Picture 1 (tube, rainbow, N blue to C red):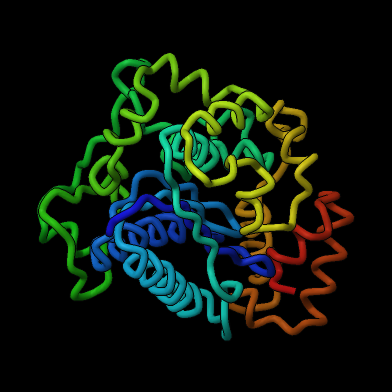
Picture 2: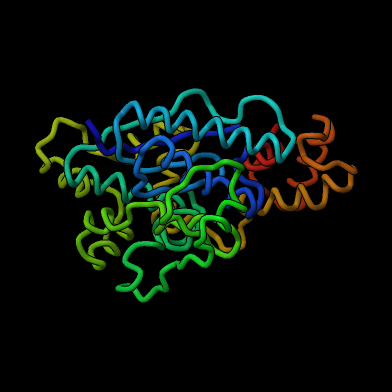
Length: 308
């Protein structure tokens, strides 16, 4: 029986994407594996260390999808960046969703993930998720249109022998666009109106969310930050709640991708190597000390960007 699930796969010790090309390819892999496993993606958030999503399908298909997603992204990442060994943590986080308010809470969590992790001032300013692709016309946003629509041209940007449906479309950079591979209309139906959508995107976590979920009359416990963050467990809930209010975001702070670009373009090149993974541990530790002095970046961020 097909059900709606929240899924999360995590990678705590390294970063999933180091530049825009990684983001494009990971997004494409997400779409291709969902199609191959007969899974519908409703929403996603691709973070630097983990991927959250809402998916509809048979439980076995969702499990297979998570496994294939990890395998395909790892293969891509290791081939491009010359790393070795596992990329993701063992297993995956899977939560079956039942009840309209439970579903609404889970979808909202995924869409607000960039905000919760202090990567954006609002859910809409984090670019690597589904938030900006909902209610576009009603909210005065230009819907993302596919400029690459022919199967032949799309195939040029995908791995060889990739299977994909005729309705897939890409942007001009070769990334599959979300309104061609995600069930965004189903998510809009969950929120009912654009005003409700905006309200839930800015609403603070608290008892009101849990009270609404108890009205569903299902046995499942209310979905909270604590329950959803079982998947990651590397950032305190108190910090995420503060980020929800905008306290931990600064436009001047460097993201993981910003720091990776500094490492790859400056330090890796200075050592005459093609990838950070070709540097010795001692060289990476030397770079870590220099980054801490130059940018005062958090130690955990420096370590994962250097794969230490």
